[in-house]
Length: 71
Length: 495
Image (tube, rainbow over all chains, first blue to last red; front, top):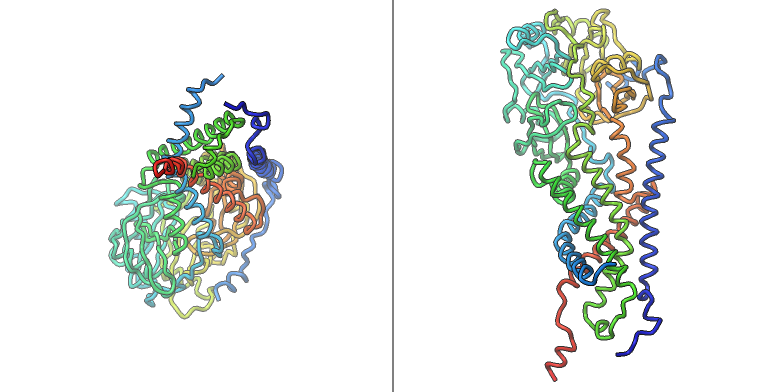
């Protein structure tokens, strides 16, 4: 039987690229998740209350607004 | 070193497990396409857009109620031993006047006939049909089925409810609670289709038994993950394998190439999507009560209104408020007696599709809305352990009862779950509890749907590419599992 030549010991055509692309896509998906989660946790930790307790924002529903809505 | 025998076994397992698990995988892929298609251009998401009936169909003055609110309080105390309630409401529904009582902010309501005092809940189908007919403009009941369901406002696991099919100008399904005919959810045709595909095909919940179906679902996910890992192992072991020219002539050889290339290209992304999906269903399925903030219910709630006191009669409320209310061609639709903090209040509903007008019952003056401090303090009484809180922001928030967005305050409570609570500015009603657990849901959903950007079209195109790849992997896998006869054998036979 004919012995395989050295060029047979390579990835079949296109497989290597697909494999590398698959790894890159997976890493991108993981990176995207890490980025979104970091963003969310940063909001949670650092962008907490814009107004501290004890300070009150006036309600946005005014009497005029109620009358307007009711008509 | 892996032996050839092990490799052969893994190949066999990959094939057979893949074949079996391709069925749920196909269901997940197809249903996700339907879910994306269904929600793509919905103007208000699954909540839909509805026009509520502003007035009761019968012009029925509330003064026709034979019983006064104080009579109902006495009845609650003597017949049911209830000492405190959250609120008491008199409302017109069709030709009926009903008193509805919410004993606590987390309990089912009690409904009484305002003429006889008879307890009406759990409401019959006939009474629920009346409530349904009064709900939406130009829309009437066509049929109903019993369908208890989860609701985040109630402590009970399942609220006794019916699904009412509505026909007319706004065809839909209304989920009405049997305690007082409250609309728990509205489902348009699209939302109904979404739910059907989601429940049966995407998360495979064929009955209401969450734990067994979730176990099966997660076993399927685990199986698919194992199949993917085995696929990568097989690819790696065979990466240098010499392909015989006779193999290359096989009719399934093209499928093998497709299966291998698309498998290694998208398998990893599918793993990430599946793991995110597991978290998502954990939140929306088995852990839903905690996810929806039910753990923060103050079971020992003692705020509210004593049933020992006297309340102003219907006539007294109307006489004191009518001059301050906007003009209306119809009688008042409802009056709610409630204690908000130290204030005795009346909420007078002029139109059922608008916020009620709030009055201080002591001064008989209008209260434009609650300040954030006051609303926060009322909310604190409804939080387990009465934790401290911070005011976060003021924003419009969806109210299911009024089918619209209304001004609300957002508070962050310092409980174990750091629960955010959204409270309507006008009424002090809690419209949503969102624990930390829920607030980190977004990134999981984004990665599950591969929504990399905020451009919906672009995101859907990316997802569609992956969906097509998964379909190619499934179909080519089937092709490899059932190969046809080799052409050269046919040739040999024929010659």
